Image (cartoon, rainbow, N blue to C red; front, side):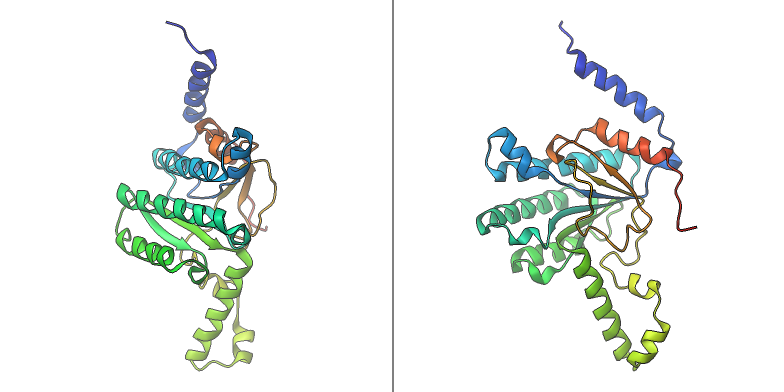
Length: 255
C-alpha cells in the first residue's frame, strides 16, 4: 500500500488542531463570506456556474463541520445587492443554484433557516421559497443558518431605521421624541438578525480583506479571519486554523 503523505499529514494535523480547541472558545455565531467561486472556475477553465455550484457544495460540507464542532449560528453571505448587477445569465444560474441549495438544507432536517436580506429584490419564487423554508424549519433543534441573499449592509440599516420609524408612528410617537429616545439597541431590534447574538467570528475566503457590506452593524466587535483559499477550496484544516486563531485572541468590546 502506498501512502499519500500530504493526505496522511493533513489528517494528523487536523486531529491535533481539533484536540487543542477549547470547547468554551468555540464561536457561538460565525459569519462567512463565501468568496472566490468565480475565480475558482476561471482557474479551472470551467464555466462560472461550475464555480458557484462548487461553492454551494462546500456550504453543506462547512455546515457539517460547524455541527460537529458545536457552532450554533452561521450566517452565509451568498448573494449581495451589489452582485445582483452582474450579467443576467450568471444571476439566473446563481439563483437556481441558491434555490437548489435551499432545497437541500430543508431536506436535511438538521438546520433552522432564516432569510437575511431584502426579499423584495429577489424573484417571487425564490422569495417565497425562503419564507416557506423559514416556516418549515422553525422548530428544528439544529444549527441556525442565516441565508444572506439579496443582502446589503447599508440596505439593512436603512430598512431597520424605516421600520423603527413606522413602529414609532404606529405608537403615536413624534419624530422629535423618537430622536431624543433612540439608542443603538432600538436599531438592533429591527435588523434582519434581530434577537440574535452578534457574530463572534467573521471569515472571508479568497484573500480579500474587506467587509463588502457584510453585517456592518453586527460585526462592530467581531473578530475577523482572512483566508487565502478560494471558497470551493476551503478545507476543514483551514476552518480549524480559523478557530484556533479565534481561540487565541483576547476579545475587547470597546473598553
